[in-house]
Length: 332
Image: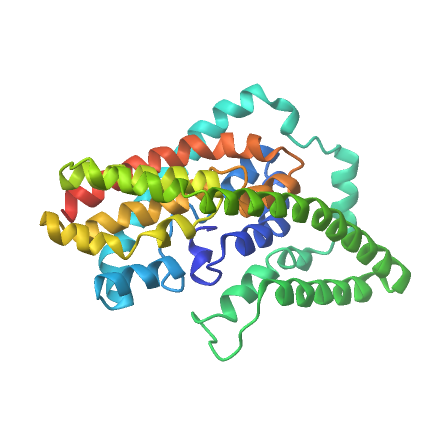
């Protein structure tokens, strides 16, 4: 569900923040641990197949191909298959990690659950999903004439929730007490997340200006490997750069223009060389402790970004290998 929502919200951070406020509480209520829920949300865009993403747009331009043709015939089939594999690996890996961290399960008392069931009308079930519904409806998928960003969607949804609460409780004091909790939660999350994001941005910029990524690329080109091995080396370099920088686009965009030329000189399929690198960039972001989406998910779950990155690393790495294999099996 989280991966499919990228068709409406192509931003990994925006989607992660939205899901932490909507699906995350639902997942905890279903008995999923905080770490498992945060890991699934942090890796929601580990597999990219949205035509609105800048990586897909730049890849199609570099290949001289129509955007929708590139996404539908090349990117989407392999990405959807990889998404299923990563989902299955999440079930296996999170189960193993949960055994070592039983403290990450929410222990709600029976009295508290019964109290909430009595106080909350049945139609309240739609309120946590309202931001997701609005994100899909007011997008290019349904109503393209109205464009609403995540911030606007959250505040509109909050207003609707306050209106429902006012009708149910018939007390403005109760409604504004609830809004006060909402505001304090936003302020607390904002203060911690922004500091971490600024630090991560400074670190990523420092890596770029030192020329470390460029040197890795030039080293890979100078080895003279066959096209399959060269593609794997480029994909690994892209993956490492994404983990270090915490960005899902910068490593891929750094040398997307070079790949068609390299593929032509080697007699290889340029699309088959580009796709593993494009996915490696998104996968690296999902397992980077300095990426915005991992930081946001970890902060919401009250965990360290390194704990969330540990939980996402195994599923997305298996997805990386699987994606590379099927790309070269069907497109080389």
